[in-house]
Length: 75
Image (cartoon, rainbow, N blue to C red; front, side):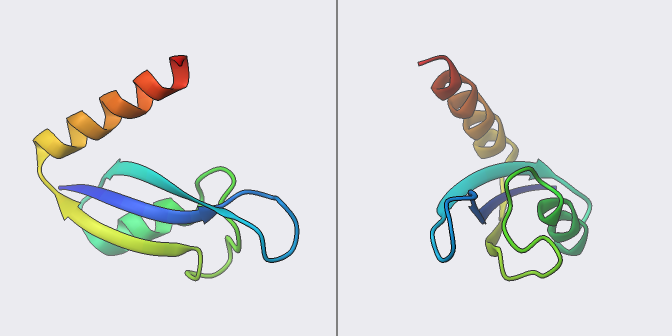
């Protein structure tokens, strides 16, 4: 199964953050939630408050999302 996750990220001071989109493979939403809490730059890693969305997506959406993130890194 493939998931799109939006987390609150960034160490920009108290109350300031950015939302970041991740694309993760996982067996079920609970395991994906645990993976998301350990991602780099995620605020409040000891709680689930930083995870704003977990949405199951198709394999095509997953591949498209991964490719768009790779392209954004180079520009």
